Image (cartoon, rainbow, N blue to C red; front, side, top):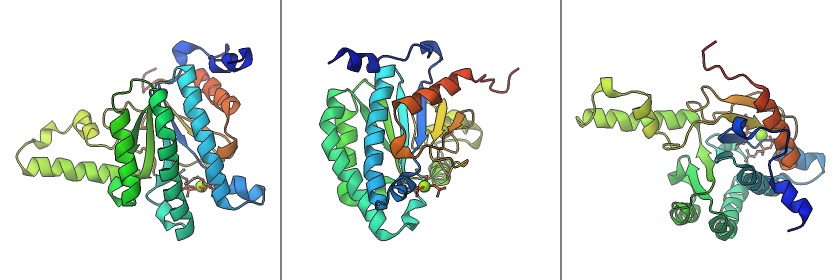
Amino acid sequence: MTAQQTELRVLPSDLKRELLPRHVAVIMDGNGRWARHRGLPRIMGHKRGVDALKALLRTCDDWGIESLTAYAFSTENWKRPAEEVDFLMSLFQVVLRQELRDMMKENVRIKFAGNLKALPPSLQEEIQKAMEETQNNRGIQFTVATNYGGREEILSACRAIAQQVKDGLLEPDEIDEEVFERHLYTAGIEDPDLLIRTSGEMRISNFLLWQIAYTEIYVTDVFWPDFDRNQFHQALSSYQQRSRRFGKI
Ligand code: IPE
Ligand code: IPE
Ligand code: MG
Protein backbone atom coordinates (compact mmCIF):
# COMPACT_ATOMS: atom_id res chain seq x y z
CA MET A 1 0.00 0.00 0.00
CA THR A 2 1.33 3.46 -0.87
CA ALA A 3 1.64 6.16 1.81
CA GLN A 4 -1.24 8.01 0.16
CA GLN A 5 -3.48 4.94 0.24
CA THR A 6 -2.66 4.38 3.91
CA GLU A 7 -3.50 8.00 4.69
CA LEU A 8 -6.91 7.65 3.04
CA ARG A 9 -7.69 4.77 5.39
CA VAL A 10 -7.28 6.80 8.57
CA LEU A 11 -9.97 9.02 10.02
CA PRO A 12 -9.53 12.63 8.76
CA SER A 13 -7.85 14.66 11.49
CA ASP A 14 -10.68 17.19 11.82
CA LEU A 15 -13.16 14.45 12.80
CA LYS A 16 -13.37 13.41 16.44
CA ARG A 17 -13.31 9.68 16.98
CA GLU A 18 -15.39 9.92 20.15
CA LEU A 19 -18.13 11.79 18.27
CA LEU A 20 -18.46 9.38 15.35
CA PRO A 21 -21.88 7.85 14.72
CA ARG A 22 -21.86 4.16 15.62
CA HIS A 23 -24.49 3.35 13.02
CA VAL A 24 -24.97 5.17 9.71
CA ALA A 25 -27.99 4.57 7.46
CA VAL A 26 -28.20 5.72 3.83
CA ILE A 27 -31.06 6.29 1.41
CA MET A 28 -29.11 5.79 -1.79
CA ASP A 29 -31.19 7.98 -4.07
CA GLY A 30 -30.47 9.53 -7.46
CA ASN A 31 -29.03 6.69 -9.55
CA GLY A 32 -31.54 7.34 -12.33
CA ARG A 33 -30.91 11.09 -12.41
CA TRP A 34 -27.14 10.54 -12.33
CA ALA A 35 -27.50 8.44 -15.49
CA ARG A 36 -29.96 10.78 -17.20
CA HIS A 37 -27.58 13.73 -16.73
CA ARG A 38 -25.00 11.76 -18.65
CA GLY A 39 -27.37 10.57 -21.36
CA LEU A 40 -27.02 7.00 -20.07
CA PRO A 41 -29.71 4.38 -19.35
CA ARG A 42 -30.91 4.30 -15.72
CA ILE A 43 -29.35 0.88 -15.17
CA MET A 44 -25.90 2.43 -15.57
CA GLY A 45 -26.73 4.60 -12.59
CA HIS A 46 -27.60 1.51 -10.56
CA LYS A 47 -24.33 -0.14 -11.54
CA ARG A 48 -22.34 2.89 -10.46
CA GLY A 49 -24.44 3.03 -7.33
CA VAL A 50 -23.11 -0.39 -6.33
CA ASP A 51 -19.55 0.95 -6.63
CA ALA A 52 -20.44 3.89 -4.39
CA LEU A 53 -21.90 1.53 -1.78
CA LYS A 54 -18.84 -0.73 -1.81
CA ALA A 55 -16.62 2.32 -1.32
CA LEU A 56 -18.76 3.60 1.56
CA LEU A 57 -18.67 0.23 3.31
CA ARG A 58 -14.89 0.25 3.06
CA THR A 59 -14.67 3.84 4.35
CA CYS A 60 -16.96 3.09 7.31
CA ASP A 61 -14.80 0.10 8.16
CA ASP A 62 -11.57 2.13 7.82
CA TRP A 63 -12.85 4.98 9.95
CA GLY A 64 -14.22 2.81 12.74
CA ILE A 65 -17.97 3.01 12.18
CA GLU A 66 -19.57 -0.14 13.55
CA SER A 67 -22.69 -0.45 11.48
CA LEU A 68 -23.93 0.61 8.02
CA THR A 69 -27.48 0.16 6.72
CA ALA A 70 -28.28 0.84 3.06
CA TYR A 71 -31.72 1.16 1.47
CA ALA A 72 -31.44 -0.87 -1.74
CA PHE A 73 -35.07 -1.57 -2.71
CA SER A 74 -38.31 -0.41 -1.14
CA THR A 75 -41.67 -2.16 -1.04
CA GLU A 76 -42.85 0.65 -3.35
CA ASN A 77 -40.06 0.11 -5.89
CA TRP A 78 -42.01 -2.86 -7.38
CA LYS A 79 -44.13 -0.19 -9.07
CA ARG A 80 -41.24 0.61 -11.44
CA PRO A 81 -41.14 -0.80 -14.98
CA ALA A 82 -40.58 -4.57 -14.96
CA GLU A 83 -37.25 -4.28 -16.85
CA GLU A 84 -35.79 -2.04 -14.16
CA VAL A 85 -37.04 -4.26 -11.33
CA ASP A 86 -35.64 -7.36 -13.06
CA PHE A 87 -32.34 -5.64 -13.64
CA LEU A 88 -32.06 -4.64 -9.99
CA MET A 89 -32.88 -8.15 -8.75
CA SER A 90 -30.21 -9.71 -10.94
CA LEU A 91 -27.74 -6.97 -10.05
CA PHE A 92 -28.22 -7.71 -6.33
CA GLN A 93 -27.65 -11.38 -6.96
CA VAL A 94 -24.54 -10.95 -9.10
CA VAL A 95 -22.97 -8.44 -6.72
CA LEU A 96 -23.68 -10.58 -3.68
CA ARG A 97 -22.06 -13.60 -5.29
CA GLN A 98 -19.05 -11.56 -6.39
CA GLU A 99 -18.51 -9.80 -3.09
CA LEU A 100 -18.98 -12.64 -0.61
CA ARG A 101 -15.31 -13.62 -0.64
CA ASP A 102 -14.16 -10.04 0.00
CA MET A 103 -16.71 -9.61 2.75
CA MET A 104 -15.35 -12.74 4.45
CA LYS A 105 -11.80 -11.41 4.08
CA GLU A 106 -12.79 -8.07 5.54
CA ASN A 107 -14.78 -9.67 8.35
CA VAL A 108 -18.08 -8.02 7.30
CA ARG A 109 -21.29 -9.38 8.83
CA ILE A 110 -24.05 -8.94 6.26
CA LYS A 111 -27.75 -9.00 7.05
CA PHE A 112 -30.80 -8.31 4.88
CA ALA A 113 -33.78 -6.44 6.24
CA GLY A 114 -37.13 -6.64 4.52
CA ASN A 115 -39.76 -9.04 3.27
CA LEU A 116 -37.25 -11.43 1.73
CA LYS A 117 -39.81 -14.13 0.89
CA ALA A 118 -41.14 -12.02 -1.98
CA LEU A 119 -37.74 -11.86 -3.69
CA PRO A 120 -36.80 -14.19 -6.58
CA PRO A 121 -35.91 -17.63 -5.11
CA SER A 122 -32.38 -17.59 -6.55
CA LEU A 123 -31.71 -14.24 -4.85
CA GLN A 124 -33.15 -15.58 -1.60
CA GLU A 125 -30.68 -18.46 -1.76
CA GLU A 126 -27.75 -16.11 -2.28
CA ILE A 127 -28.96 -13.96 0.62
CA GLN A 128 -29.26 -16.94 2.97
CA LYS A 129 -25.81 -18.14 2.01
CA ALA A 130 -24.24 -14.72 2.59
CA MET A 131 -25.98 -14.23 5.95
CA GLU A 132 -25.01 -17.71 7.16
CA GLU A 133 -21.40 -17.52 6.01
CA THR A 134 -20.77 -14.13 7.55
CA GLN A 135 -22.81 -14.48 10.75
CA ASN A 136 -19.79 -15.04 12.98
CA ASN A 137 -17.70 -12.26 11.46
CA ARG A 138 -16.88 -9.58 13.98
CA GLY A 139 -16.15 -6.62 11.70
CA ILE A 140 -18.63 -4.05 10.47
CA GLN A 141 -22.36 -4.89 10.56
CA PHE A 142 -23.67 -4.28 7.05
CA THR A 143 -27.46 -4.32 6.65
CA VAL A 144 -29.05 -4.15 3.22
CA ALA A 145 -32.71 -3.11 3.24
CA THR A 146 -34.19 -5.07 0.34
CA ASN A 147 -37.92 -5.19 -0.32
CA TYR A 148 -38.03 -3.11 2.83
CA GLY A 149 -40.92 -0.92 3.93
CA GLY A 150 -41.15 0.66 7.36
CA ARG A 151 -44.92 0.32 7.54
CA GLU A 152 -44.84 -3.30 6.47
CA GLU A 153 -42.14 -4.00 9.07
CA ILE A 154 -44.29 -2.50 11.82
CA LEU A 155 -47.36 -4.44 10.65
CA SER A 156 -45.48 -7.72 10.53
CA ALA A 157 -44.19 -7.10 14.07
CA CYS A 158 -47.78 -6.41 15.20
CA ARG A 159 -49.01 -9.62 13.63
CA ALA A 160 -46.28 -11.72 15.29
CA ILE A 161 -46.91 -10.12 18.69
CA ALA A 162 -50.69 -10.52 18.37
CA GLN A 163 -50.16 -14.20 17.62
CA GLN A 164 -48.05 -14.59 20.78
CA VAL A 165 -50.80 -12.94 22.82
CA LYS A 166 -53.41 -15.18 21.21
CA ASP A 167 -51.29 -18.24 22.04
CA GLY A 168 -51.09 -17.13 25.67
CA LEU A 169 -47.32 -16.56 25.52
CA LEU A 170 -47.47 -12.82 26.16
CA GLU A 171 -49.71 -10.41 28.07
CA PRO A 172 -50.70 -7.14 26.33
CA ASP A 173 -49.12 -5.22 29.24
CA GLU A 174 -45.80 -6.87 28.51
CA ILE A 175 -45.57 -5.28 25.06
CA ASP A 176 -42.93 -2.60 25.45
CA GLU A 177 -40.31 -1.09 23.12
CA GLU A 178 -37.90 -3.95 23.76
CA VAL A 179 -40.46 -6.63 22.89
CA PHE A 180 -41.51 -4.70 19.81
CA GLU A 181 -37.95 -4.22 18.55
CA ARG A 182 -37.31 -7.94 18.79
CA HIS A 183 -39.91 -8.41 16.06
CA LEU A 184 -38.51 -5.87 13.63
CA TYR A 185 -36.34 -6.89 10.66
CA THR A 186 -33.53 -4.98 12.36
CA ALA A 187 -33.73 -6.93 15.65
CA GLY A 188 -30.40 -6.84 17.43
CA ILE A 189 -29.12 -3.82 15.51
CA GLU A 190 -28.93 -0.47 17.29
CA ASP A 191 -30.90 2.47 15.92
CA PRO A 192 -29.00 4.63 13.41
CA ASP A 193 -27.28 7.75 14.75
CA LEU A 194 -27.05 9.36 11.32
CA LEU A 195 -29.30 9.01 8.28
CA ILE A 196 -27.96 10.30 4.97
CA ARG A 197 -30.15 10.87 1.93
CA THR A 198 -28.60 11.74 -1.41
CA SER A 199 -30.06 13.66 -4.36
CA GLY A 200 -31.79 16.33 -2.33
CA GLU A 201 -35.19 14.84 -1.53
CA MET A 202 -36.42 15.86 1.94
CA ARG A 203 -38.36 12.70 2.67
CA ILE A 204 -38.04 9.34 4.37
CA SER A 205 -39.74 7.18 1.69
CA ASN A 206 -40.86 4.53 4.19
CA PHE A 207 -37.35 3.81 5.53
CA LEU A 208 -36.78 2.69 9.15
CA LEU A 209 -39.84 4.51 10.49
CA TRP A 210 -39.54 3.11 14.01
CA GLN A 211 -35.74 3.17 14.21
CA ILE A 212 -35.10 6.82 13.24
CA ALA A 213 -37.06 8.37 16.11
CA TYR A 214 -33.90 10.19 17.30
CA THR A 215 -31.61 9.86 14.30
CA GLU A 216 -29.80 12.93 12.93
CA ILE A 217 -30.72 13.55 9.28
CA TYR A 218 -28.33 14.81 6.60
CA VAL A 219 -29.51 15.51 3.05
CA THR A 220 -27.11 16.28 0.20
CA ASP A 221 -27.91 17.24 -3.40
CA VAL A 222 -25.21 14.90 -4.70
CA PHE A 223 -26.56 11.90 -6.64
CA TRP A 224 -25.80 8.57 -5.02
CA PRO A 225 -23.16 7.37 -7.55
CA ASP A 226 -21.17 10.55 -6.81
CA PHE A 227 -21.34 10.09 -3.03
CA ASP A 228 -17.68 9.47 -2.22
CA ARG A 229 -15.30 9.64 0.74
CA ASN A 230 -15.24 13.46 0.65
CA GLN A 231 -19.03 13.63 0.65
CA PHE A 232 -19.15 11.25 3.58
CA HIS A 233 -16.55 13.34 5.38
CA GLN A 234 -18.86 16.38 4.98
CA ALA A 235 -21.82 14.43 6.34
CA LEU A 236 -19.79 13.37 9.39
CA SER A 237 -18.55 16.94 9.95
CA SER A 238 -22.15 18.14 9.94
CA TYR A 239 -23.14 15.34 12.33
CA GLN A 240 -20.37 16.27 14.73
CA GLN A 241 -21.71 19.84 15.02
CA ARG A 242 -25.14 18.64 16.15
CA SER A 243 -26.34 18.75 19.71
CA ARG A 244 -28.30 15.56 20.32
CA ARG A 245 -30.64 16.27 23.18
CA PHE A 246 -33.05 13.33 23.12
CA GLY A 247 -35.74 15.53 24.64
CA LYS A 248 -33.49 16.77 27.45
CA ILE A 249 -32.18 20.34 27.78
C1 IPE B 1 -32.12 4.91 -6.06
O1 IPE B 1 -32.02 5.63 -7.23
C2 IPE B 1 -32.02 3.42 -6.29
C3 IPE B 1 -33.26 2.68 -6.06
C4 IPE B 1 -34.39 3.15 -5.63
C5 IPE B 1 -33.22 1.26 -6.34
P1 IPE B 1 -33.30 5.92 -8.12
O2 IPE B 1 -33.45 4.80 -9.09
O3 IPE B 1 -34.48 6.19 -7.28
O4 IPE B 1 -32.84 7.23 -8.87
P2 IPE B 1 -33.75 8.49 -9.21
O5 IPE B 1 -34.36 8.94 -7.92
O6 IPE B 1 -34.77 8.03 -10.20
O7 IPE B 1 -32.80 9.50 -9.76
C1 IPE C 1 -36.01 5.40 -1.87
O1 IPE C 1 -35.81 5.99 -3.10
C2 IPE C 1 -35.75 3.92 -1.97
C3 IPE C 1 -34.36 3.53 -2.16
C4 IPE C 1 -33.33 4.32 -2.19
C5 IPE C 1 -34.14 2.11 -2.30
P1 IPE C 1 -37.04 6.22 -4.11
O2 IPE C 1 -36.46 6.85 -5.31
O3 IPE C 1 -37.79 4.97 -4.28
O4 IPE C 1 -37.93 7.24 -3.28
P2 IPE C 1 -39.04 8.27 -3.78
O5 IPE C 1 -39.94 7.53 -4.74
O6 IPE C 1 -38.31 9.39 -4.45
O7 IPE C 1 -39.72 8.72 -2.54
MG1 MG D 1 -35.28 7.87 -6.49
